[in-house]
View 1 (cartoon, rainbow, N blue to C red):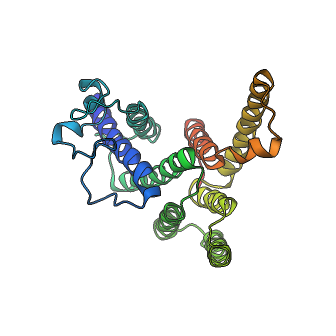
View 2: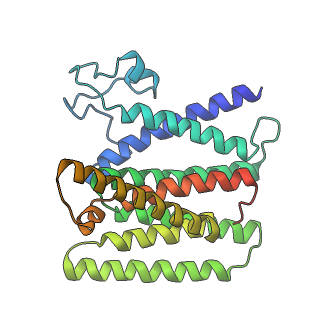
View 3: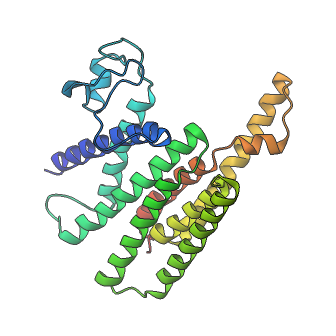
Length: 271
């Protein structure tokens, strides 16, 4: 019986993954992500019903568009598969099954799904464009605040901690708005800071601090490998140039998901 439950969860996760790929492609272009029908980015042909099944459509079509025969990037298959696996892993670690489903557990899992949507989309956009999208960050803030309200009402957790987070949110958003008006652009590091605060508000300070440490370690390894590659190719770049090319939000989001799962496994996940 549990196998059927996790198969359903995997399918739901892969559907979310399909949405993530769509959002990562369209949001930077400021295209609609809810009402506009899915289409091939190469020939712009609207996709049929059979073209929209996550994972299976990619496999059955041989990784090519049914209409223009252009190759589809493997990232679609990878994200849909990993998303399905991620949803199953978290459901398993939260001890969800047909036998012990309850309203409270479903609500908690729903919030986790909303949070993962934020993290994965902000990561994907940063990886593709090295940009912290302000609207996605605001979505993350809203999810975090809703979760704080839920915890305060249902679990009667102290509100003072969350009031501090809300004040920080307001200050960062005000600073970002002022810089946007003054310099006609939103700063990358302000977006990173907003992401960090959102992570702390949802996953807690310990998980967030551990995520930052893992991010710094990953970035250090990346810079070291990049410098070694540059020396072999005799392409000398300064540390500042290399650092400026790193998608910090991507590393931060991936690290947060990893630490979040480890925390669930160790049963030390504290909100």
